[in-house]
Length: 156
Image 1: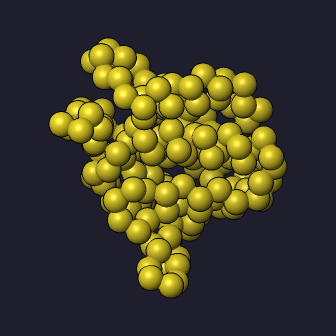
Image 2: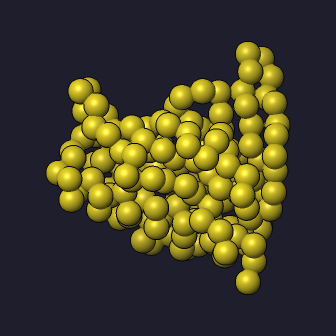
């Protein structure tokens, strides 16, 4: 069993979700890299939109055999860069984007399949949560489409 199999690599707290007056969903979302939370454990952002973006970018990268995936946050200058070394091991690098430079922070190797499965699983949890509450917007629709497409991912 690898380190990541014991770890929930993506931290999503649906209890924190709120629907804003602009019909956007905000709440807690972050990466949990073996106890190192990025950008922080209680990072408040747009989780449905981010999961849709991340899942979309991940599926494209896997399909196209890309070597790098950048998973951006909306609030703040943060991104997680995934270097796809093999189909088994990826490197995750926490990055803070400054005006003209990237400040690299914590990095670690992660199990590729476990990361893919975690992202798909968390996306499904969020899709079902939004359905249960009757929340519908472009972000939910996009995430749902990417979630259904992810069922055919070769690394799932």
